[in-house]
Structure formats: C-alpha cells, structure tokens
Image (cartoon, rainbow, N blue to C red):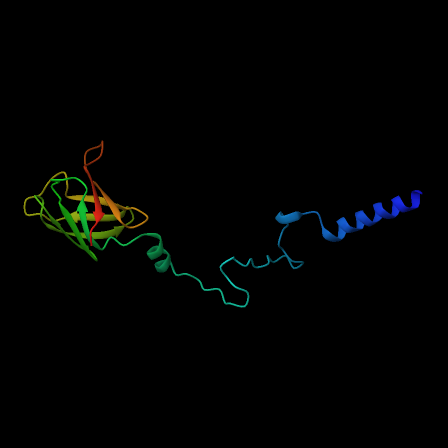
Length: 154
C-alpha cells in the first residue's frame, strides 16, 4: 500500500515544481532578464499605449482657475475675483487688476491696486480638486497672511 501514497506524493511535488510557488507576487522578468510589460486595466490588448505629455498631466491634475469667483464671506474686501488666463480683476472695496503666475511656489496672484492693501497684495491660490472652490493664502507676517475663500459662480 505504500506505492499509491508515494505516487501521490511525487505527483504533488512535480505539480508544485511545474506550477511554481511564487504566487501573484512572482517576478515578471523573462529568461533574458528584461521585465515583461504590464498591461493596465485601461489598455486593451492590441491597442498602442499612448503616453501622456507633462502638459496634459498638469492640465488633468489641477483644475483651471479661469472663471468668476465669489467670496464666501459677506462684505469681504474682495467681493469677486475674475480670472482670465494670466489676468485677474477683483471687485468690492478692494477693486483692482492683477496678474496670475504659475511659479515654483504654485499658482500666485499679484494685485496692482492704485491704493495698495498691505494685507492683500500677493498670495498663493489653492484650488479644490473638484474645481468649484479656491482659497487665496495672502502673503503676510511670520504667522501668515489673510485667507480668502471663493466659490465658482461662472
């Protein structure tokens, strides 16, 4: 009776050797040492892979600030903010033109008011990922500057 159990044991050992025991985390390198290409769930077999340019990635990653924005605070010194490309205009008690610049620090706004407001002359814009809200962190003292929040109205 030992013969059938040896055959089963040898068969199991052979199956393990043939199947391998690395499982799902098995290295995908072929015999040549080159990694095999991984097919993403979005790429269908037979379709060429399309590389995204850095400009397309940046455009996808950050929503555009272009549009008309309204302050969430009633009677704020900046009632609305209108962004058109790199041109900015504010309305309200602090009504003046300005510029928008995409710098290393992020999206920067600089207002060029006839009567400057030392609390709101330059700052960094942070866009909400869904693109319907933005916050301006104005440059200020060591503790930080004023903060204005806006919602998109156009």
